[in-house]
Length: 479
Image 1 (cartoon, helix red, strand yellow):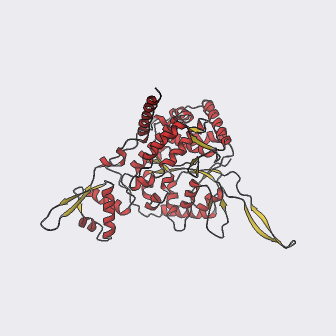
Image 2: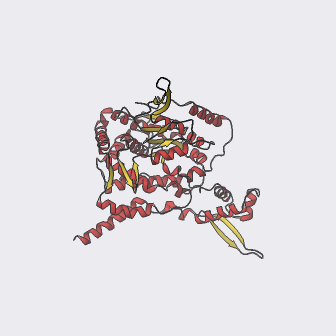
Image 3: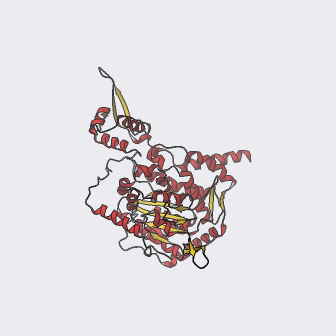
């Protein structure tokens, strides 16, 4: 089995990472994000509905013996399980198949978030279940990612003896298309995405969607078909805010990831006291679930009951949210389906039951809360972000002229109007019209966060209301 210590990079990846390191150490000053005076706090603890079944047993068993966040333990297990079972089990949305591929980024307030510690437990368990699973470190180029799961490469070669062109296998490729990528410096990946000509963003999006990957370069025939790639990344919040561009936030890259806030759960100066024998029962259950999912080779479906309830919560999940929060949560229904399917397969079931949806929604609610917390000062519009920063420093408000002068008049008036209207629609700012002797004056100031999306009910709460309504209707129809 490949561990991330065994990962060998391509020359192109080595060159890129050297450039990233040089850039990091060049002494260029990067403006720190202003994270003070925030109105939305770190997400509250994960709803216990997420700790359903074997996943919950695993977290409960490990949690007392580690400083890692229980949320990180859970996300790592769900992602790892989704990868180890391969793509033979899937959930179907219209004509599109959704294998259990999860891309998750653990976001800590600092390097002390114990993000790596949470992975070690899952890695060891997955290794004990299947030694052939590939663990690769590094996510610096699209070509490198394709190469790790590449197809057989055949070239046409002229045979002088037969005077015929014959196919020759020059690379046997990688037979096992499962790959679990662990990127402990995801900030380096985000910086690479901004480099001209880099195709990593497009390849990652393709890996989440279909698993069919290839470059458009004529001289590079490497491609991958049916790749089953999962990603676990680590980053600090400050790095994420600095390096995730507005383009990657809105082009579909950002919403293919679960952004999950984690922190150190406790202090254990002497470490934990977990014995290998304590894990035997959980490992045995996970091994059985993995074998069940591999043998299923088919679609995970709704029960009659959950199909009715899903139709109700689907409306809430797919209701548009504006701004960067909306962009990063735009695949909510797809992710809930994938997560619910994973919980079902852990239960050795090919049907999604109520408990599986509740568990998936509890995870998604935490992801939503994490995104809202992380990006509370951002809009997805660089100019709008700068207007927010200017208004934060001028609590008494600013006129349109004040804002223009703040940018030293180096600003397009039409773009300014668009950004201001966007902020008004998002309820991030408010406008006060002040009558003067001449033309009325508009005064813009920061709005309170009372109308910000985080104040709404959680999806799990809404779903539980639907369950209650469904039960009441069922009792009336079947007294």
